Structure formats: structure tokens, C-alpha cells
Length: 197
Image (cartoon, rainbow, N blue to C red; front, side):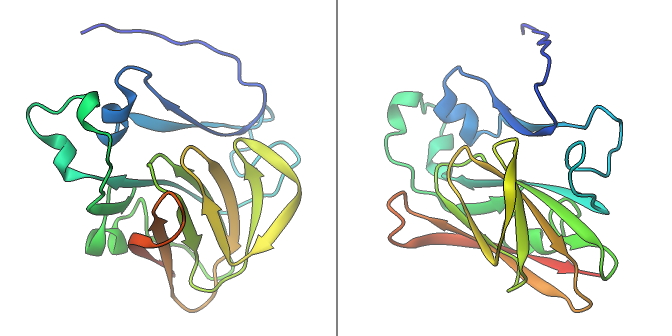
């Protein structure tokens, strides 16, 4: 296979996503994407950006759905007009797997500030809820928000990225990501994971 090296100068610290632009529909479905986290130039890995809020632990959540019918031997981009997901995932984990996957399940000390970099690399809007906890949305698509938005849920459309900052409580909670049809009329599926100490 071929190899390419990309060099670029990041304009500012933040959460970025990448994917190839060749048969993108299938490559997205196959997980050929990722996240690039640009750290502040001052070298502090515990800051969301230079002068931004500090955090104790950091998680990247790739929100994604999967249509197993797209993975036949002879499927091409032309056969993917309808996406009917039958798996609903965070970081490739669904169902019971997401409850204890160390890249998904949040484990920290009570009172720790957790930064969740939520990245929707799927085809469905995803609604993130952290077990009723309030959290601050501090950045969108790699850019700090002028004023953090405090909420209990955040809609992440396909291709969007939101940085969420939450203080971990003393009691365990269940985080839920609901995946909607593109018109936001019904929930197609969901995945749950744990937030706890």
C-alpha cells in the first residue's frame, strides 16, 4: 500500500477529527477515522487550551453507529443509500461492552473534573446525557465557546465535536448516548456506560 505523511500547523489547541476522502461512506463505516487533540503551546496537558479550564482526567468518545448489512463481500459505495444501523457504539463498544470498556467507562475520584471530547463520526445525531449530571459545554468543533453552556444533555450532529467538562460525583451514574434518525423523530438505538469512582 501507499503511505502519506501529512504536516500541518494547527491554528489553536482543541479537538479535531480526520478521515480519508476516498469512498468515505464505507470507510467511515469501517472505522477509518480518528481524533487529533492539539495541546496548548505552553505544554500543559491538563488544560483544554491555553488559559482554558483545567481537568483531572480526559476521555475521547467516538460516537458511531454500524450497519452490518454494509459489510458484505461485494458492497460498494453505490449500495449504501440507506443506512439502517444495528449497532450503537462509543469507541467501537456497544451493549454490555461499553459498561466496562476502559476507553469509555469513566473512572476517577469523586470531585475530579473530567473532560469528555465527544466526536460524532457516525451518520445519526447523538444525544449525550451524563446520568442527570450538569456539565459545561466548553468547546465546539475545536474552538472554545465564549461562555460555557451548562446543561444536562448535548446533541452532537454527524461530524460535530463538543468538549464537555463534568465534576464526578460521589455516587455512580449511567451515561447514555441516544442515536436518532436524521429527522430527530425517533430513537434508533442507544448505548450506556458508567461514570463512577
